[in-house]
Length: 194
Length: 208
Image (cartoon, rainbow over all chains, first blue to last red):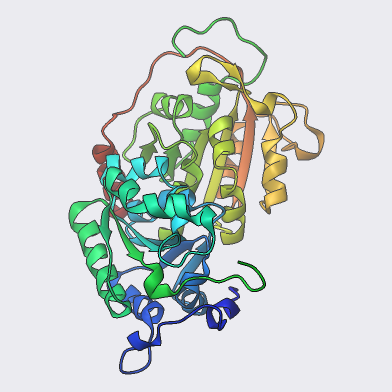
């Protein structure tokens, strides 16, 4: 379903140093954590930085990958699955955090856990200035809205942070977000352009 | 709508319509969008199986989808207004793609922003939510209470057995737009405490 050709694009540096002993990268490690977290629903507006994770979710019949028109739908959806008994994950690019602002009032006021996986843009080596304003604001936006933020410093730290964020969300009854930095994902370049 | 003036246009009686439908709900979960649709559902009889929005405009349909996906054996009805549905209009495409057979949406369309001073809404001009839903891929999308031709349900909006049958037993996803009057109704407020609303709703869903 998702074209992940861009993930293997040589123009997008991939940080293979973080592969674990059987060669899994951070996206695969996060994917592998889903069953133990009881997560069967993953909602997303896709991003190249999430490509491997989304590809694996899409290929797994035990995971329902829900494509959204806008990220705020994912917050409301995750609140609904929780009311129905299940934690869900919402995967988005950092620009999507700008789209979820008002909808985050729902899990906050109702004390509903939900889990955000955010691939960052607008950080180091960003080539597209349009990504910078919201990318820069993401940590402050999330903090201001009562979302616990986890920022792993290396690729190998992403899945542990995801598991910790899920636990924190469940314990506190609040949203939690994992920000995967552009340094971990690799800066996107634009073929034939700046 | 506490200080509403005279009715602006003819249409269905929203309280009678919602009560007539919810009287036939069985054990269905009901998700009520913010404003008058929530008051209508509360007026029809509060239930732990009702989840009411007091904010987060645009989120009702997606919250309903989440419940429907997590609880595929449970019928879920979203009751919301025309402007709330339009704010989350992309949800119709998302719902169509997931094709939850247990989800129905009832859009109470008074062609106005009833809670904020009766400003004219967009469905009073050229916008047809049932047509948008069909275009998004929800084939079972129709309108009651207006002369709408192609999208007509084929039965009277006051035939509650037919309407409730479509919403609670029809193969989902189903969407019904009900053209209601712009009317003043008595206050009927559910609890404002979001923690109370979510905890009792979640317990009621898990409890049987």
